[in-house]
Length: 430
Image (cartoon, rainbow, N blue to C red):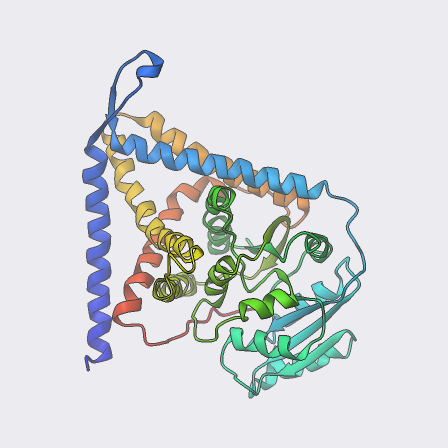
């Protein structure tokens, strides 16, 4: 048995080597030339730097995804009127150590433009402060406080515990610190007429420099980059917040898996393999609390990617091309989510190649694509009233986006080497 301290040093070494390898390969690849057959344009073959192809490819993909994102938001906002009552939605709010933030989700759900919602706050045994807060909130009516004494210790188990004890045609899952947009539940209920699940968008509240970084990360990496993939393949994320799903669908998929570090990522792939129809609702985003310290920011992203690696391990284990063809898609999408972080980091040395070879226009086009989509998303959020101003944070998005890939690579490396089920929790201030 290798001591844990040795494994920790090993994964740090592997992280450094992996980062060095990505940067080196990116630099070498960027300097290579590729020949494009442009005979149809009458110009004959054209040789250009691979760095140009990589950066312009990323810019084009992001730009197209941004157009899809904006179109989806505008199209959904034109759908009026939305229902104000109808089938009951059981809104489940798992909570642990969230006494200072719990009022956000409960209050916003009760103030929703949809009347027929019941809120179920699920607390953990021994979390007396949160339990006291939940019981106080339950005095307002339409709020029930549950204690997960059956299988405590995870968000997934808390949600499963609540769903087993509620009777409602649809179930919503929300974070304890989530400020739910008043129109999201009405839009979700309307969406359930045609789909089995409606997934909303969440964004970290951009009330500080680090929080602003998290906001733009969520815009570009969480919602924009997957749009083109979703349009082509039909794969959509089904998370464990800002989600409303039919109860029968939740039962059919089997609920969340408490053994998974990122239970929502795992649930998304199982929903895809079960052919669950999903509608993504970006028009009415929910506000969540972002990381307030660099340590929390790093640890949270590292935890996500360690969880993604764990999910990939499980998805690969159930790969069955003949009996279950959709497991092939799951494996490919999950692998892409992991490898995409290496590709994102490799753009940095390729950008350096372009700067050194006198190709600033390609860099400007790449930066312009990032600026364009982040500014468009921010303007939509200002228009929706969920943020109060545009600000200048979007100008720095090209700089801090690669930092996410560093945290992601660290998390991916840790999974097979030193991860032993540890759980990182971000401090919430409420």
